[in-house]
Length: 354
Image (tube, rainbow, N blue to C red):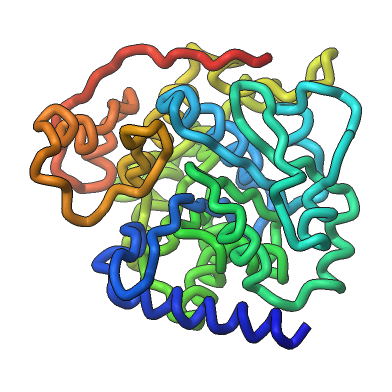
């Protein structure tokens, strides 16, 4: 057992040295034996419940597949709820290992299933909380993902805490989406940024995503007219990295979780005419621009290298740096950034549910 932990510590030291040589934490390491990790890992976190972590994680998986059909997407839930299974399970019977089984066994490979919409997932476990007493190493999931060598994007959904399983997600991820919908959840976001700071992670390894923002909330103040402007004002004051996209609250989206079929429908398929659909599309597009996964000549997904090949065509470069699709609201105005030229507004191709 001591050999295992020694190997984990050595791997973490090598990984940290690699990260220290990278200009941005989202670019792969390339020299002195630091092989680029093909998988780009995103953790969806918040120490506060009710901010939409599972809604964001599950729907991001669907939208990423819709935007990039060649991109393998793996969704892993570290919560005890079965939302992931209700959305993606093709077979109703629970067959095979769950995420708890995989973490205990030390291998994710045998637990991965192909689900609806072409999304791969690991079945959830109602007893995953037991692992909090069994696992003390915050690098366990990171080691399993390194051994898996997933050739695409991995999304990690977490529970509303900062205990050992969430710490595993934060240690394993390239980017943490810290969800906030009000001042209380912004206060909880401080704990995530402080934890990452103590670990020596780069400042923009985590970025706030405003989620389930109720745009109907208004204030009788000239500077702070509504909840969105209030949250943006507070985020600027705290100087936290922030995504350009945000997600509105929506009764229509909430209804997708409860229906006579007892399945969870995606926003892309259940609410394609909603504002949140356009916002989710924008969010997925923004993450692709940040993570920059691409398909090489053999059809495998790899991280884009820091220096592009001189033989790469101009059209490929333009595609990699294409402007984000518009949200339908003036994003540039409320973020105080220079407006970008609008991109293609072609509709998404919906991946099949079966």
